[in-house]
Amino acid sequence: MSDLVNLRATFIPNDGEQFRVRLALDIAIEEVAKEPGCLRYEVTEDTPEQIVLTEQWESEEALATHGKGSAVQDLNESLSALLAEPVKLERL
Image 1: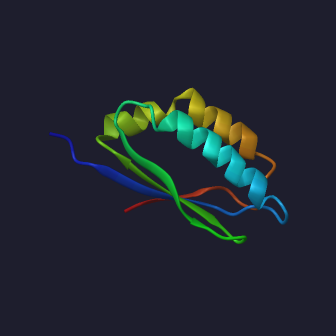
Image 2: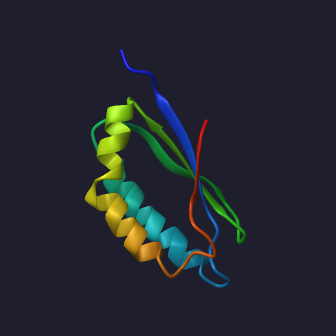
Image 3: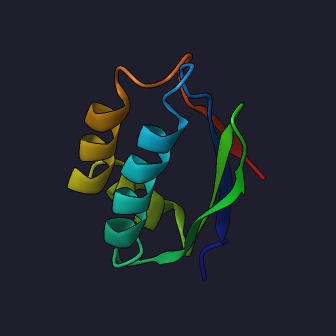
């Protein structure tokens, strides 16, 4: 059996863009939650300075498939001009 994969993604919105970043994330969450192997994909912290998304995947394979999926591509495109810095992704 594969080990679970736990991640934390931190998004730093540009000044005044927190609402739009959160909206883009909410849209992505709806899509990603339906992906095979997704056990958790939710915002766990939402402040004007940062938004933290916590993820849990049933396997490395499920995570890899997610990373190539349209939901991630659409999210990255939506966020391209809204973030002050690249998304920080950490394994937990």
